[in-house]
View 1 (cartoon, rainbow, N blue to C red):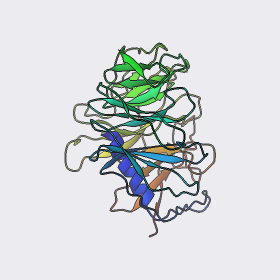
View 2: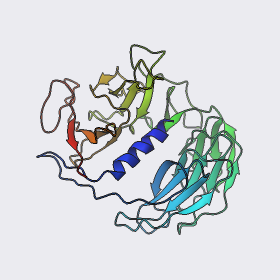
View 3: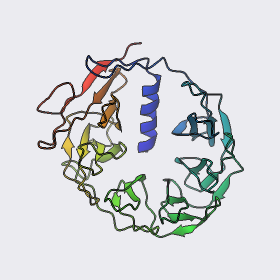
View 4: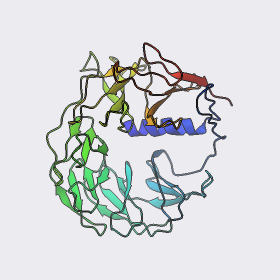
Length: 341
């Protein structure tokens, strides 16, 4: 469910009118949002160049209409009208990759019932769906056995790719609630981050037992990992770190408490104890938002406040504190600014 909520956050950010940075920060404004009809209850968005024109396109998985909407980009921030592809058995997570080795971008869509592969024609259209009957309620794509062919990771196991858009039966250990593929221990083999910890890859399509994440709060039975940003090196030590949001003691209450925390990587697939940024937000994402070469964090605030908190991470390694590029503070503090409408 985390990805659903992240996408809702991203959409919420996208429809806001504009953002003004404080003096000294990179001047960036967002134009008024444009809306594009897609299927019912859009769940996940992925981007890629599906027609080979060098312009970014979008694919949207729509839960209630059980289809995927393809929106070809015009290269100016606008998109053509969506073309929908029906998916039998439902949709959930969606990933991109070249599954048949023709250098054209393909899609794979997961659901509780199956994994559906849509091989791209290179012109923004796709061939008839290829379905594999397997639990693909979580889905990641990578070359897990390092044979040069893209594979799929599902809760049932790794579907090793044959290089022609088809896959072998589930292989090895499946991973549920898998969020991201990255190299967390620096051995050039794909590892997997999941809600249950980090699974280090052996490079043959199998994984080591999970290395658990640090305890994220004082109430481990009633709180935990809620959302995460893409793994990044926030402190410049060459090791991947994590930025996560943690649901507090009242996880299942109407108004749970949340915090944004950083887990600094040790370079072996484990992490240091979390550093609480002192920010109460549910969602977080990462990127170099001000173009200074340092990874930043962005957290959308609750809609009622109409604010976005941006953290710029000019991290001081000696103190392991976040120092804002604009000011140094004894405790991490966001740059907050209201959105003009």
